[in-house]
Amino acid sequence: MACAIDGLIGDPRWLPHPVRLMGRVIDWYEDRVRAMVDTPAGERVAGVLLAAALPALAYVGVWYAIELGRGVHDIVGVLVVVGLGATTLAARDLVDHAREVLRSLQTGTVEDARRAVSKIVGRDTANLSESDIVRATVESIAESASDGVVAPLFYLALGGPPLALAYKAISTLDSMVGHQDAPYRHFGWASARLDDAANLIPARLTAVLLVLAACLYTRTGKVAWRTLRRDGHKHPSPNSGRPEAAMAGALRVRLGGLAMYDGKPVERSYLGDGASNLEPFHITSALRLMILAAALAGAASVGALILRS
Image 1 (cartoon, rainbow, N blue to C red):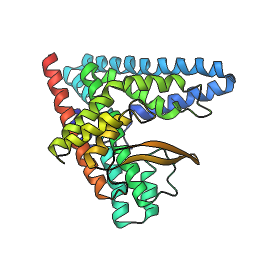
Image 2 (cartoon, helix red, strand yellow; image 1 turned 120 degrees about the vertical axis):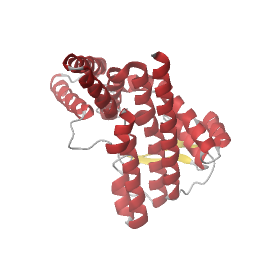
Image 3 (cartoon, rainbow, N blue to C red; image 1 turned 90 degrees about the horizontal axis):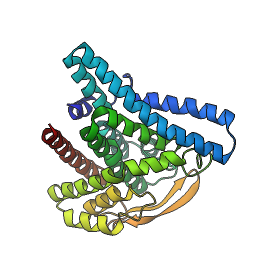
Image 4 (tube, one colour; image 1 turned 60 degrees about the horizontal axis):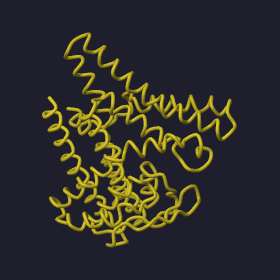
């Protein structure tokens, strides 16, 4: 039911969302830490406290909300569970954003496409070529298939909305403060390490699901599997390279390479050994692979719930 809701309406901005609340809590906490702490050790301690407290508060708060709903009526409890579960999934939003980039490439200008892709990637987009825009979008689809779809489903099946929203708290912490550069090198250290641990299994499950999707859709499952095994560990992240390598093999393209972050060039290892000049149709193919992998993950999650019950 949560997957169906996410597929139908995604994340309307007019609806309150737990992740936006988490973001405000992180901003509030950081402002106060910056006003009181000015040493690396102090920042690291404050970051550890934040990384431990926010997921714990998310877990307890969601569990309490579900119990309140059940106290009113069983149906209300079910609605709370399903509604909160849907907020952890981001498949529809990922599809919508990627399609916006695709439309901009097909009917708009490169500037339009750069603005669209800037919403889903962290790199500098001002000077990206059309091929670079497609490459960034495909990489984002692969990575987000893990932390926006498969990982939430994994934790929903494992521990319901409390555990899934605790995971979303970890993911939100990493996206906001889990950076290696100043001013987050010390403050965000614990958040980044916690996110690495939380995504260790889901990222590898995502890669395997993308390989299975490639077997069913593009008939490139063997190439995807070979690329995953050869290149999955080459990414600076211990997790992101797995789904990206599987996607590169499935599409027979080459991902990675040079990208600009905050005006600084970052050279990453190449993933895959196919075409280096990506074209807009690769976005369509990547989305279809992601949707198929998400469907497989949803079916597996339902199966796990049935077996557990």
